[in-house]
Length: 193
Image (cartoon, rainbow, N blue to C red; front, side):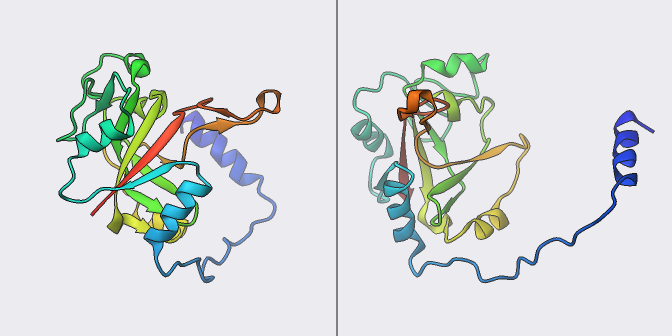
């Protein structure tokens, strides 16, 4: 028996009282129009920008329009013109020069404005080291609540994913609101059809 199993068996042997899992059959929050609610929540509560992208729009022109001063754009999404690819860098630290990281979001939640971002690139640091982040999300992947979002999550070979909702911010430092303390300073969501 491994030391891990031995520790877990000792812990199990010392359980005095057990509790049933809570009933999750309660009525979940639902919105008549999850897309409209997502846009409102994201722009007001989460502090991000939302652009609706039409099929006829040039995604690269929209990225440049949103971030005209960006020097280095990083992405591994086919069709996105990028100066740096997170799949080809040698180290995660090579991504700390990125002005705009463009990544794909899998599921968006109207309840809190967050987006599930699975790791679809070698270096996940692009999600956190970029000055600003662009998340590309399909309108059909917007759900009302987190229960629905968790039902749709799929892990890939990397086995990592995270929810992102707006720019990173903290008010710990001298009680001043600071953007970009732990991750991107700004976030833009591109909603596609």
